[in-house]
Image 1: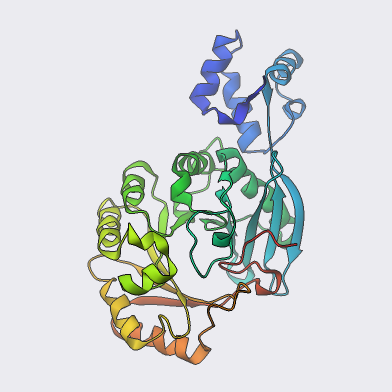
Image 2: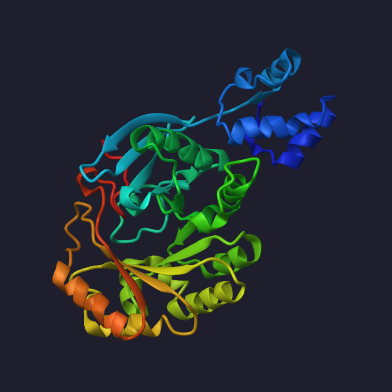
Length: 345
C-alpha cells in the first residue's frame, strides 16, 4: 500500500529516503515542493531525477483536497467548499479588508464538530473525523490562489475558526502550524496565526508549552457559568474559573495575543450586568474583546441584538478600560458568516 508522503516531517522524510537507498538531501527539495509550491504530482518536482520521481510514484501518494465549489458574497467574502479524498466536505472562508491589505482565511480542522454549541450550525452536524495537517494546509494553498487572482494579494492571516474545534485535533493542528510557519513551508509568521477554541483548559495549557507564539481566541459568548452552560455544553467540564487559570498561564508563558469572542444574543447576554461580568474576566492579563453580531442559522432559537445596543455594550466596556472591537457580519448572504458553516448547497 502506498504511503501518504505528507505525513512525514522533514527529518522523517530524510530518514525514509535513507532507508530506501535514496539521497537524504533530496528530502528538503521534496518538502518544499509539497508545502511551498503545493504540488499534487511527483512529476511536477522537476529538479528531481526521473528515477527518483518513479520511485516516489511507486511508493507514495499526495492525497490533496479538491475544490468543490466557491461562493462570492456581495461584501467580497469568499466561501470555498472542498471535497476530501474520502468524499467528506469542508468549508473555508476568505475575509478581505482590501483597504488595510488584510486578507484573513478561516480554516476548518474537523469534518463536523462534537461540541454542539447552540448558536452554531456546524455544531448541529455529526462529527465525522479530524483533518490531517495536509488537509489543513491545502486550504491555505488553494484559497491563496483564489485570493491572488481576485485581489492580487496573498493571504495575510489565518484563523483556525472554520468547522470543528482545533484543540480536539491538537497534534494535527500543531503540525500544520509548524508547516505553515516553516521557512521550507509557507514561511508565515506565527504572529499571523490565531487558534480559536470553545475552551478546553488542559489543551490551552499544553498549547502554551508546545506552540510557537500563535494568538489564541476564546469563544466566550457569556461571562457567567450559568448562561455559558446553556449555550455551550463544554462549559460543564471547562468552567470559567478553570478557563481563566489556563489563559493566565498562556499569558504568563509569553505567547501571542489573547482575545475573547463574544457573540451577542438578544435577551441572553446583552445587558450591562453581562458587560460588567465580562469586564471582570478581563482583569489579571491583557485581553481584547471582539463583540460579534449574531448570524442566524435557521432554527429560530436566537435573535440579533440591535446595533445601538451592541454599541452601548461596547462603550460600557471601554469605560471600564477594556480593549473592544465590534465586528459586523461578513458573508451572511452566502452562509459564510461566523457560526454558519454547514456544507449547505
